[in-house]
Length: 60
Image (cartoon, rainbow, N blue to C red; front, side):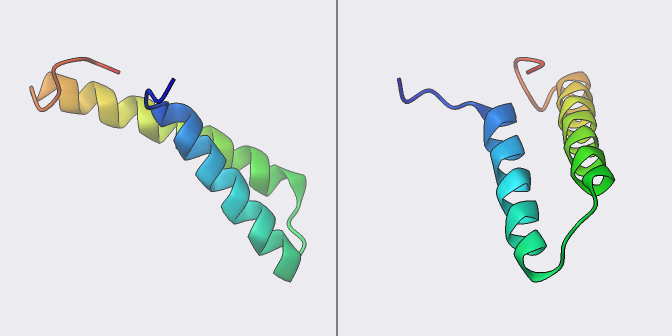
């Protein structure tokens, strides 16, 4: 309990942001799916790059 969950934190942030935005203007489903996929890909790539540059001690 209390451990960080980076991927879940980022996905929750994006989901809440899109849900709040959809209250103002309805968003198509593909926007949600694209945003989630891009978030996962960006998270993975940034971790791999940071690990390769020795900015992180673990690749996750």
